[in-house]
Image (cartoon, rainbow, N blue to C red):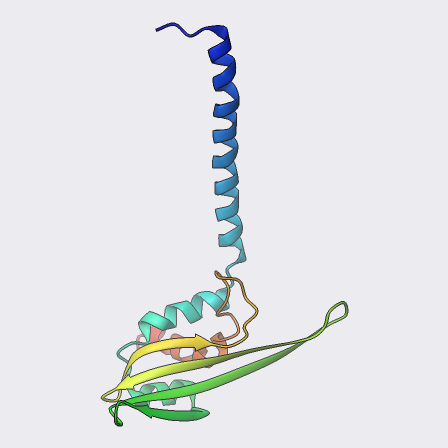
Length: 145
């Protein structure tokens, strides 16, 4: 089937729009990757790799928790650690960033690790302020101890 010149002219803007959308999507993904910090990466790593650690190992690498909570009639224990940062900025004043790491244990072993707080991070960088809590634990895991 032969296309008339007017059909070719109509197709050209559509092709360019598609090309621009592809370039935009690739650029956006590159920005996301560039924004992820090593601290966020370690904190994200800990969420899956600390599962199965014993309570003693966690306290040994993270220290004593700020507080603990018992749930499910004492069958589940949550160790809660907190980190707080104060950032002083000339233009916007002081910003407080904090993170609570909630390490859930069942039968003395980690079943989950969750972070909460005002981290001020973006979706791909939200855990960077939580990293100090688990830093030594990640080092322990990576060393294979």
